[in-house]
Each structure stands twice: as C-alpha cells, then as structure tokens.
Image (cartoon, one colour):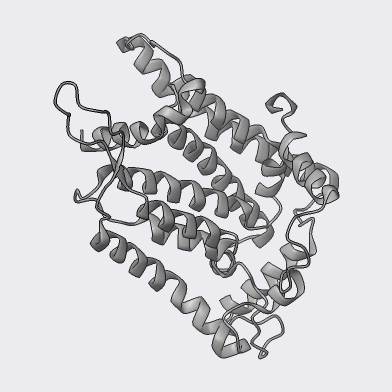
Length: 320
C-alpha cells in the first residue's frame, strides 16, 4: 500500500506536464481488466528478449559462432579477461591503464569468465536480459509519471522494438546496463522526491552514480537529479475567501536526505575515480583526452545534429 501511495504521489509531480498525453476520464478498472493488464506487463520484456534472441539466432546461423561487431566490445572483453585473472584493470598483462570508461560493465564481464562455455555467448545473454529489464523499467517509469497503463505499455514496447537498442543487447557493449540503471535511477528519484521527508532510503543518486560507471554520460543525469532535489515547491495552505491566489511557493529542501544520497553516490564513485587518479594521474580515464578533452564549439554542427536525430527518429518514424 505504501508503494502505491508513493507511486501516486510521484505521478502527481509530473501529471500537469504530461496531461496532454494522458487518457482523460479513464473508467475504473474491473477485476478482469486488472488481470489482463497484469498479464500484459510481461509483454515488453518478452518482446525485447525476443528481439535480442532473433539477432543472436541470425548471427549463429550466419557465422556459426557468437562474436562481437565492434572493436570496443573486444577491448571491454580483454580488460575483463585480465581482471578475472587477477591482473587488474589492464589491457596487456602487468600494464595497468585507465582506458575503460565503463568500469562497471568491465567488472560484470569479468564475472562471466567464471562461467562454463563461451564468454561471448554469456555476454550476449546478459545484454539480452538487461534489455528486457530496460523495457520493463520504461513501463514502470511511464506509470510513475502518470501515463495511463496503455500508454506506458506502448512506451515500453517502442523501447523493446527500437533497432539500435535490440542490436546493442547482443553487441557486447554497456548500453543495456546503462539504460537499466538510468531508468531505475529516475524511477527511484521520482518516488523519493514525492515521498519528501518520509522514511524512504535515498538510493536514487547511488543508482545514477552506478549508471555513470556504465557510461560517463550518466554524470549529467546525476547532476540533474541533484539540481532537481534543490527545486522543491509546495502549494500554500488554502487562503481565506477573497484572498489573492499565490500559486506554488518554495519549500524547505530535505538537506539531510540529500546529504545521505550524495554520500552514497560519492561512495559508489570514489573507488574508480581514485583508481584513475593513482594509475593515470587524473580523475578521468585516458580515453577522455581523445574524445572530449577540448570543447571546439559552443553549439553542435548541423551535420552532427542530423546524425543524432537520425538515431532517435529513423528506427521509429511515427514518433516524428
């Protein structure tokens, strides 16, 4: 019951912004409707898993064995192999380097080396499982934001059948892990923010910090979540009749809970950042210098935006 109350409160926070996309005057669900919806919640994860397995089946049929499509996938696997063998985070044995921007994914891949059989196959199955979890998390986030069950289900299905995400599930890359951690970080953030000062563990910032260890872009989500915690508003008590409407007013920030959340996030990030500092002399991995050390322009070029918009809209043209 407490979970339902928190979910309802989280939905109220964003309901006004999402109202144009919500079903109005939705009739109360009958027991048969509730049972049907309970069965349908498994549909997005099943579709996502089926898409990944279809890619895997096509690969096995074409090549006869599992492999990776990118050199970055093999780089992750080489780091993981040495890590599993006790050689530390190294590409060449005995040469510790800070070349991995996804240390959490590297650590998870290292665990797969202890399983029997092909590590390539285990990595693909792990990606497919994470892809299914990401589709389910999409539905949960939609419901928490106030979407009607049908629209939340649609959002999850769109996620499940998006080609780049289905391909990423079997690519040996960290994308499915980052998607799951980012979505669950946002889910927990919304629920904790709606709960206010109630006794709900402030875990969202730690989950978002884990997402940053899967892909460094996750640091932006973490920063946005902290900023959002500082923007707390409430409706004033009902004014006397005839008094002027005052709207929302600034509310007291729950500093104690925010401090606990920041501490948990710092504990998550401390180990990898200290490793980067001690091994490479900087808190950033060496690949940062090659990919983003210098900001060459304040605004992205039109050609770059075209590539990004293509990634977003070409797989699902109806969303345009």
